[in-house]
Length: 89
Image (cartoon, rainbow, N blue to C red; front, side, top):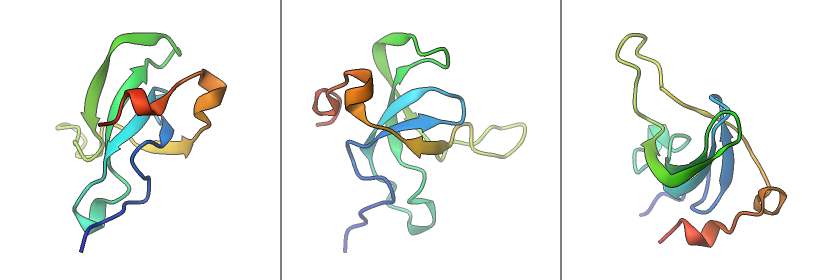
């Protein structure tokens, strides 16, 4: 059985850091389906990154023990003129 995830691959999301990212891989841990792997596309000010940066949303802050980033909402790629297919393989 394969996990689909809460956020399917190709979903454009906004993180609690206000970074813009695209989901690139679901988390296989059933308890962490809401914490997929993403590629960061823009920083917290909305400035596009020169190259996408891979981030795992289940990565914890070593000081607080809380996730470093979390998804706060999904958004429409057309609003940002983004072709998500360019970022997923």
